[in-house]
Length: 141
Image (cartoon, rainbow, N blue to C red; front, side, top):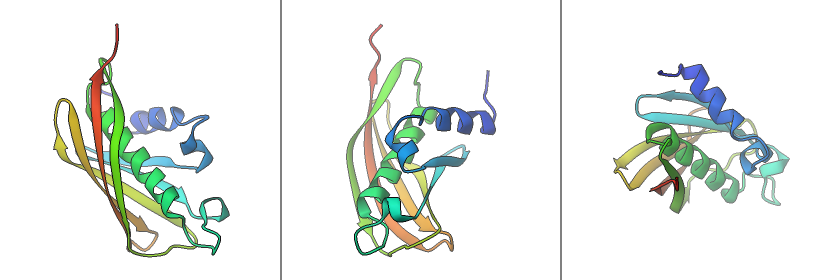
């Protein structure tokens, strides 16, 4: 049975309870055949001491959306996904509003995956470019 778009997003957001994603208010907001989008509010919880978005919070957003993308687009009945490496190039500061992370696959292999994650602000300005590699391994029966 194929889940609806709303059901997939609701399921992903429900899985975030009592996790870092809930702490940072990261929410999955859109997905299609080859992408997943999450958003995170920019407020004092994710600031550096000088009042701008912390790069670590941006990386957490990117890793969260990339890992969820691997879960959604791979066989999670029989496999689990873990992040292997993340890189983040921060290009613009943000002080308020939301940041949005859109994850798309550059490589979707059976065992390893590589995702491109573009983080933008409310005005669609590019904030960060991230790359995440993940691995999918068999679940023990």
